[in-house]
Length: 178
Length: 307
Image (cartoon, rainbow over all chains, first blue to last red; front, side):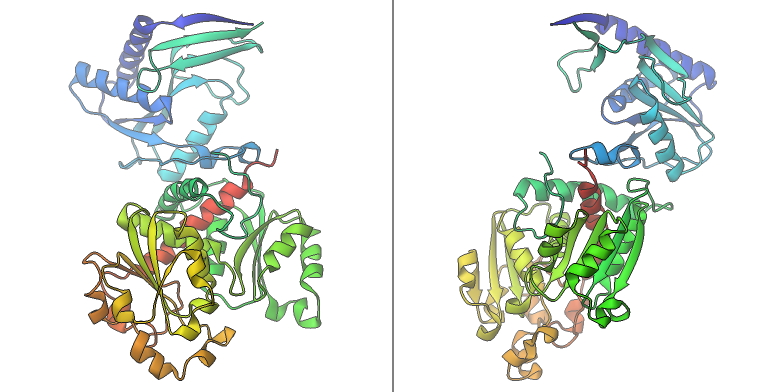
């Protein structure tokens, strides 16, 4: 038995991304010296949406990098078939401000891997973290700078982010196994 | 796709899907070697032993660099300075090394099947870096990677493999690998350097180099395997080079965008002329660069799936 509850529907997700974008621009005093890096897979699509919104608000084009963290994971030995994909960051990371974008923040291990990966590519001025959902249960001292929604998921709860770029619709669903 | 292999003993037992998956991973690993910081933590805490009973420059260094760029610790054993000279058997050497808990043993041996024997008695992942005239899987994989990189695909290609096919593990592994794709392979050599029943592998046989190169997308040259008695199969090296040395006149008969490959070491003036080895269509140096990326992908994939 499973129960589903929608935490964010299409409209609400749109509003969250709008707010996150404004917060990013506010905190960084505009879009100067700022770049986005999306963590594969859904973080990349969210980063693209933020990029679109910055273009609409500030009429500026932020560079957008794609990060695959597979080589930086701490659990490769437990993966049956570890699949690496391309990291595609063509701009210089030195001395810029980076907003790292991911769909869900949980243990913090993915963010840790992403920070290490970025540090191997350059020396940014700051790395900030934007996530659509913070589901709590951190195992590392990592906190987001920009959060869509916060929901502490219990042990029997699972959170799924669906984006129309890869899934059929935009929504965040909380699934509870009974 | 699920990667089910603990060891890499040959390409023969890999599926087309597994090969493509591995080549795709290798493409990501190639980027690491072009960065300022050429290291990722993927294999942190793993130990890799290279155990080479035959001479090697490229393969051994390539494996060592691949392992180090993945943050593994590497130990190299060349048998000339090891207890092998005191009469230790391969089995005993393997068991003794195993007791020091390496995660990978990469072995090159003159006896076909030596890596397979080790894989049956040891828990470490065994990688075949060449076993006699049998297989050299990572060479075939890096060759496929290079072909795919230059041609965009592995299907629909016409490929000539020229030289001492009978004694070449590179030829054998490449034939096994390329036949999993829609390729037309022509093997070219003097009759004495072609193994019996070669046609059963589904390849064409052509004794004339002039004819073998016509309309080819890829020409893969091989050296004479002197260490396996290759020179005994030809009247003289001079006569061999008169008939089978790849020169510009041959290249001009192939497709206009042909690539020339060679696993190295090359013997200039014997199987390949200076002009061809250094020509714009030569991808011999690309093969070496790609070798590191492919071997990183092999180590990475074999490191997964322990639980």
